[in-house]
Image (cartoon, rainbow, N blue to C red; front, side, top):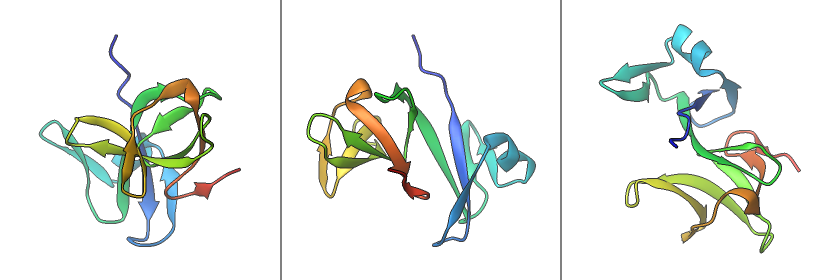
Amino acid sequence: MMRPIEFRVFFGEPNGKKELITAEEAFCENYIHFVGNELRPTDNCTVIQQFTGMTGKNGVKIFEGDIVRWVKTNELFSIHYSDLIAGFIMRIDEDYVMTWGKELIVIGNAYEGVKE
């Protein structure tokens, strides 16, 4: 079974605060567009994040850019896409961990911060 392809979009100042908007809003406002079969921002104020296909322990969808707590160790990680493995990984500083799903709790994201 393939995972659903889903995106969320943050829009705001290039190096400042960003606001979560829907992909539909981003298309209507021309913040994102397709180049071939790739979804891309139209400017440096827009960030596109993809759904990983997994949900955390609390049932919340996990997206690229999310900050998660690993239940096993209580450590915080951020979610990133890796070209090397063509998939999503958890990152803390320069170290990477490969675990997913029910062992994680989504506690925030790169643009809205931690919500605990």
